[in-house]
Structure formats: C-alpha cells, structure tokens
Amino acid sequence: MSVVDDPQQAMALHDLHGRQSLGSYLRAIWGHAGFVTTLASAYVREQAAGRALGIGWLLVSPLLLTGTYFFIFGVVFQVDKGVDHFIGYLVVGVLAFTWIIRSATSGAKALSGNRPLMHSLSFPRMALPLATAISEAVTFGVSLAIAALVAVLSGTLGVRVLAVVGVLAVSLLFTAGLGAVLSLAGSRLLDVQDALPYLMRIWFYFSGVLYPRSIIEARAPAWLSTILFDVNPGATITGLFRWCFGFAPAGDDVVAMFLTTLGWAVALLAGAVVMFTHREVNLGA
Amino acid sequence: MPDRDLVLQADAVHFAYAPVHGFRRSPARRGTDVLHSVDVTLRRGESLGIMGPNGSGKTTLLRVLAGVLTPREGRVRATHRPILLALGPALRGRLPVRDNIVLGLTALGLSRSRARSHVDDVLAFAELNEHAGKQLQALSSGMHARLQFSIATVIRPDILLLDELLSVGDAAFRRKSAERIDALRDAASAFVLVSHDHAAVQRLCDRAMLLRAGSVVYDGPVTDLPEQA
Image (tube, rainbow over all chains, first blue to last red; front, side):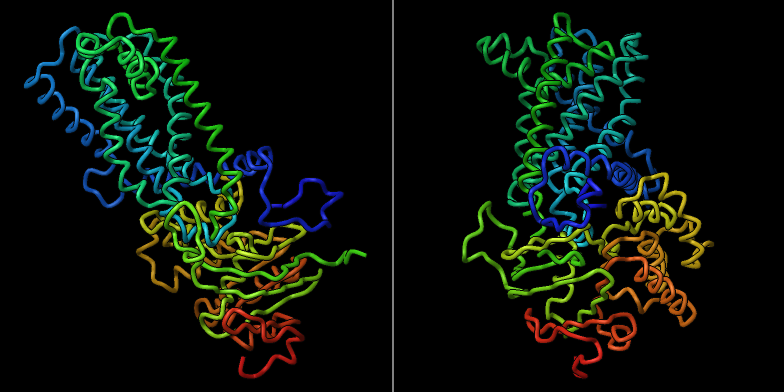
C-alpha cells in the first residue's frame, strides 16, 4: 500500500504516524474490503467449527431464547394484550435485539481482542469492528429463517418480507457504527466491556421487545413512550423487522421508523469514521 | 538539499508500551521505555540488519518502522508504507489451511480474488497440498511456519521488513526460502532484517545496527559488526 497517491510525489517522505484525512481513511478501508469480508466469514465459520450441531446453533440458540421469553412474558405474565400474533412479535423482537446486543458486545472487544494483529500488520483499524459487525449480521440473517417459519405458520408472510433486505442493510449500518464506536471505548477502558452486558440488558427491557407499546402508554406519559418507541433505535429496528414479517401492531409508522434508524446509522457510522481518523495512530501503542 | 535516495527516516524515536487503562495517559502510566532516541536512515538499495540480545527492542523498532506501533516521541517518515512480513496473529487455528491463505493475503492488502489466485502457489511452495482442507491447528509447528513464510512472501513490498522469518523448515525448504528472500530483497527499494543469526545478517545485509537496552550501540558496515552481536 503506497503512502502517497500521486506518483509525482512518490519520492517525498511522508509521516507514517500522521493523522489521515477522512477521504484517504475511507479509501484505505475500501482497499481492505477483501480483508474485512474474509475476516467476517472466518468469524462466522469459527462459531460452527468443532460443534456437533455446527451452523445449526445459529438457529437452535435463538429458538431456545425466544421459547423461554414466550413462557415468561406470554404465558406467565400475559403481556400480549393488543398484539394479534404475540409469538411472532416476540420472536422477531428477540432475534433483532439479540443481534444488536451481540454486535455491541463483540464490537467492544474487536480492537482489544486483536492487539497482536494490530501490532503486526498495517491496515485501517476500523476494519476489525466492521468485520465483527458483518459476521454478526450474517448470523442474524441465518436466524431470520425462524422468523420466516413463524410468519408462515401465523399466515402473516407477505410480499413486504422482501423489504427485509433493505431493513437489514440499514440496520447493519447502525450495528457497524455502534460496534465501531464501542470498539474504541473498549480498547481504552476495559471496564466498558464489563459494563456493556448490563447496559444492553437495560436497553433491551426498555425497547418494547417483550411487550407492546400499549403497555407503556397505559402507565406512563406520552413523551416517555415517544422516546422509548419512536426515537430509540432499538425499538425502531425491532419494529421494522416485525413489519417485514407481518407482526407489527396496527398504527406503527414504518416510514418514520426507517428514517429514524437511518438517521442513527448515519450519525453513528460517520462519528465512528471521524473518531478512527483521530485515534488511529494511538491504537498502535 | 534533500537526499533523493532516502526512502525511510526515523528521528529520535522513543517508544514505551503503554498500559491499557484509563482514557488519559499520566506520567505514572507511561509504561516501560523500550526504545530510547533511536535514529534509522535507509537509502535506496540499502539492506539493514538489526541485531541485539532478547529484549533489546529489535522487534519493537521494526514495528515502529512499519507504522504499526506509534512512537511516544520522534517521527518516522517513508516514501512508501513499509510492509512487515509477520502473519501469525492474522491466521485462525480453527479454519482450514486454504482459507487461512486467503485471510493472510487479504490482511497483507491483496483483494479477495487476487488472494484466491495465489492459494495453489502458496500450498505448493509450503509443500502442504495434501493438508489444504485441514484446520490450521492440526498442522505441526514446522508446517505452520512454512505456511506463514509462503503466504508472507507472496507480496513484493517496496520497503520490506522481516522479523526472523528465515530459519523455517528442513534444509531443502531453507534453501528455497533463502532464494525467495534474496528475490524479495533484490526487488525492494530497501530491506530491513531483524535476526539473531549473524551469518544471515552478513549474507543478506550491507549495513548492520546493534541494539542494547533500546539504544543503538553500533550502526555501520556489516563487515565491522562486533563479533559479540
């Protein structure tokens, strides 16, 4: 990889540890797209390697999780009021939010867990959280087979399922940005990695994954439900996937949810790129 | 008047491995100094051998020159980004050998399609054709080293940095790997080798640097390198 792009200046000496411009950093990431996708693929296959069920765990694990939540919140606490297909509502919500949690927690370790690699090879460090985000998206994509099966059994699967590709893409931008920001925090302060599972669990419980919006609206002021369901990207992402599989409650504004998710995604990803251009040189010490 | 033959210059480089705690570095958290005011100058066509006892800072200096470690003080400038041929941490034990070749080559900056096109050549050079589908962790340490060498030496960097990649495999493999190193060195504008092997440095380099406790104690013609280096 050349330090300079202009052959006329190829003989000039350039500072190896100088801060890169935004444009050159983005070009460097693009130049390592092959590494990002290959590493992401390696992460996915490592999850299956050495296990009797192999890639089947990508389906069994979320199935067990949603089964447990359905028993507790659907059967024991009966919070399914106002939702036509509560099993589908729960399954898709749990799958989507579990993806967000996994992307955040593995993103936080993406730099600190690869220190030997960063001390050996020169590549844009943002490649590491990006690879983690893509691998988690692939895992989530496989687990969506469960959502499709529940939608078929519930009779809700329709043409809108095709929109899942776009929703997955914009949600991936969000999880990539979130993971990249957390990777920087986690590389500097290991406490972030310790605190994150608890913070994510709190976020999970406040994002309407296990109960419908009507439960909050009946007990809390309107502004709180607006924050929890209209501004909170955890709620808009789960809401979008529910809409794709026909499990969205009546009255959900899918366009507003998409735009909110897109806004968060762009803000986080742009913020992450800017932070990496500032912090990149300090990641190697 | 700028020296037009200069391809790499490190000025007064200090380095310390910083502890990974807290958002800010305080003097109490500076870490242990590994390099003290090290200067390195490389001109076109030069090959430099860096020697010194364990813990003298050789590998750290190589990583600073590669741009993967950032000096606490001083600066490193180069005409092209130097490439350090060190692949170990990039490879994944639970993946097949074939996939590790693609991973290693993309980590060195090749596109995925170009990396795939080199897989058979790498397997042949490493003499691991029949192990292509095995997990990397199933290989012996010797096979592992041969694979790393064969992957790392696919690329042709302008400024080449090597860290003890020479004593790999049996006598026959060492012969052909030495030929490949010669070819890499000849193709590069400048070449830096870190090694404990006095004979290898004498054979491959025209200049030598001796480090002790992070400081340069000798920098000159390889023929005048002190015997105790």
